[in-house]
View 1 (tube, helix red, strand yellow):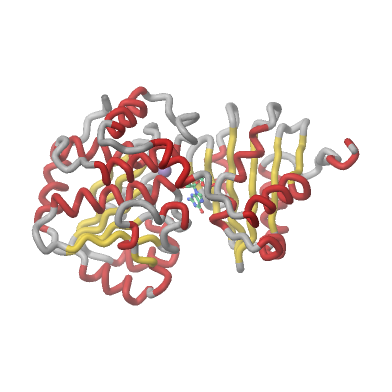
View 2: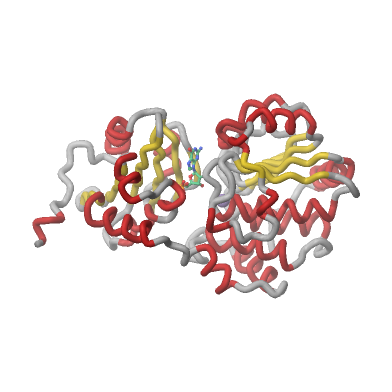
Length: 350
Ligand code: 5GP
Ligand code: MN
């Protein structure tokens, strides 16, 4: 079982805010992943049941729900913030409770951040990233050692309501985030509570294999061909530094008709080589570059991401740099100590 204690006064306050609210807004980060979508929808379905009759519970994602999570129960309710930022401003003004999940600061919601900061209602954060913004959020439920936000949502809901509102739909949402944030129970699962959470969720007649297929085995032909291109043409390997990195221009992405969602998981290939310790993936967007960092054992990539203005976890972190691809690449190369190193000549192997 989860051994950390939630503050009982925090729980009482939060229960009261949910019970009294007429408008609850839920929000997670830009480019939502499985943990963001799963915890967002899990909370939505929990608050539907726990709030007063007539209360509206609205899940919001800055740039919407990724395609491979559209099958999550009731994900059709997710409001795409970027479609109408004025509507988002109105919603934040009218809300009496805003819950941010799987994000440590308002800035992670991109274009939604400013109205979120301005909102004068109760604001709660439920998250597992380092450095939660305790200034911005009145109540913070944070545990950087836990596997996922979905696991935290499960234990928090246990502390608030016991098993009362847990059902197949909620369990499906939470399992989706728990399984993806641990790479299918491969990492970030050192704590026994991670498996205890999984064990509790599968009691609700969920289907792990089907959930896996719906999330992972969803490649388009274009995306598969792009992966081939990425590994053969864009992977740079620095054996002495044990660093592997890939960088993709907008043209690369246009050529294969792929975008950010299609690159989810690609950075992990850098660490599949036995000798590699750190991996990086850079993806050009209009006016900025998205950086993903991964490490195996020794390096703390959260520290590296912070130097680029980002953050995340020790072994998985990221940043969004307002610089073109080539400049960002130079910065990343410097931070990884490969700015003067020569990458392996992959073609010489014949
Ligand atoms: P990914 O590389 O999969 O996009 O993100 C890995 C981790 O880094 C996630 O936990 C995510 O929260 C964090 N992360 C990714 N992008 C950013 C960013 O732009 N800013 C911050 N602060 N964290 C990020
Ligand atoms: Mn997460």
